[in-house]
Length: 137
Image (cartoon, rainbow, N blue to C red; front, side, top):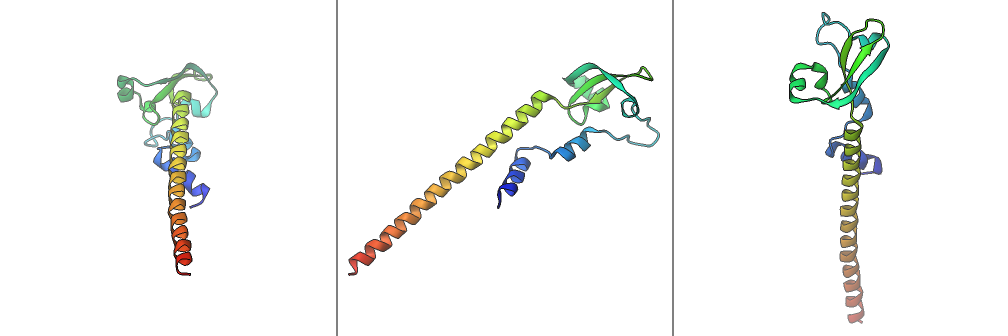
């Protein structure tokens, strides 16, 4: 397995999503055609409240909390409507990044230890083989 395969394996094991699928997951699609398009998709908006973690009540009542567990309150410029938009927390992303780095270092340390142990076994076998050849002379 090459370095690229190992990175993919670590990303899967640590629960990270590739950037393309994460971006697609953060963008909500309406459940049915009858649902109106959110104003922030079609017009300019201003962030009224920065990205915050959803409370238990908000998780149940605001659909935008579902994808990431974080929302930001926005104000659309043309329609002057206040809406909620799903967002990604910088702190949570940093935590996931360091978790990935830690798991990558752990796997690297385990692989290095296994290589050293295997090298010792092979060195002992080679030494034993040389010793037997010398004894047979």
